[in-house]
Length: 636
Image 1 (cartoon, helix red, strand yellow):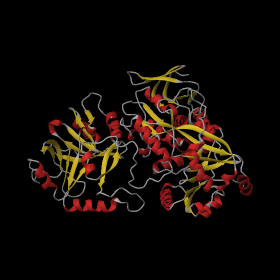
Image 2 (image 1 turned 90 degrees about the horizontal axis):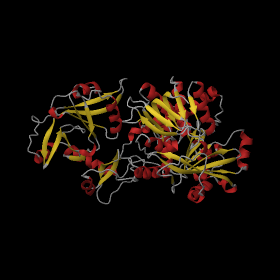
Image 3 (image 1 turned 30 degrees about the horizontal axis):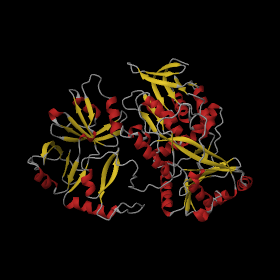
Image 4 (image 1 turned 135 degrees about the vertical axis):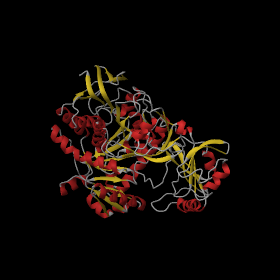
């Protein structure tokens, strides 16, 4: 085993091997992958092996399409068969609401270059003969669905990476990771140590344990996941003989099922409501090619629906039930990217759909490491979307909720309840008493609208129950004055003798004079927008920045990366140290004037002015800025 490398990738599942391949393909060949056992040990080997392009986030869907198209390349380069069966598939709707959702998927497919077609239940039955068309109201055909050999794909990535100059060390268990004073990383194993510029945590089931070696608690949790394989079915044999093709994939969203052919029978998997976490606090290092005990009672409700929707299953036996753990992040998307405060430490974990997303994750991470940018908007996968507020208990609650809703519709503006409220502001109870209906941003409860007594959120693809009430709120602000809470904005304090020069370099704006604010875009080196702030000059107090709350960790990672080494600039994220309120509307000045002794006339306090003033008994930082087009004030 080499003693030095540019990159050490930890974890020999499909994701780690994909990262290794992509780094080598992009020219970084001084890279080594460390795997504590055989490749695929963990979640990869027992995966159902399905692959699909559909994802709720269009940018993730693009990466899934890239992943599927990549398999031919790695098979040719490596000489390793990947076992890809591009059968196509049908997405099934048993309700009108689900059919509306599928129509939205078709529309997204048009601009993503994914070929999707809405078809009738009878047309779906002609393509997938095991389904009962009477159970469905519509369907969508996807020609790019399929399945593969999990082991074959993983070894193809590894062999292709080796041919490009990368190295793979099996049976090499990472026991500790230590950062040296010079910024390099010591990766300590049972066979010695490797010193590296970069370390990638692709530890899969052990991602938490690897993260803890550097003081990082990642928000991932493993869940037990079951699928069954039937005995040979005559219906399958008849279709294969008649058409010369396999039975295509099917996703029955309302039945919470996915199906595909497996040899002479069928594979049926489910994301059951009565789900079960596995090894909630620590993953045993000696776990490898074992399976978990099946629990058919837990998935029985889903199987009952499946046997009704696909009647042929009623006449066949179950040959095997596979139960194995997979890791999930709280929202079900991967955790990818550089970790704030740990230069050179990267993550690629929580990738539950590894054979749909693994190639895209490897591409994005290698781009990020080599070029300084992932090459696409992958915010939905960025590890920075979570902060230290994503505790183990929160992660457990949200992962269980997400797993149980894997095939459920999330309607526009629908807020999910698990793990909430986690963070609240001092005005939470007061606004709740006024009927506030809450959303969440970066773990913080955020009021969305106010419901009169007897009215509650009801969601659909059409107008929800908030529509009439929101119209009244808009009219109130347009004709009078309204108040909203703005605590969810990220708030930063920038100080130091070099603060002005640093801000002038970081932000694409002219710095405001003392007591003034300005809009301040932040651009990357290629000129693309990565932040949109309000910048205020507080004179001797320093500078104040306000921006997107959900991007606080993302922006602090960027800010800290670009701070000068001489200590002349300090930036602090203020978080919940400040509570923010905003009043807006033509009568906003009248309200403010009654609450303060300060002069808030237009002459004394013009647009984009900011300053300290007492509001009631509280000392506040008050800025005059509007997000509504009317006279507005923001107070923090």
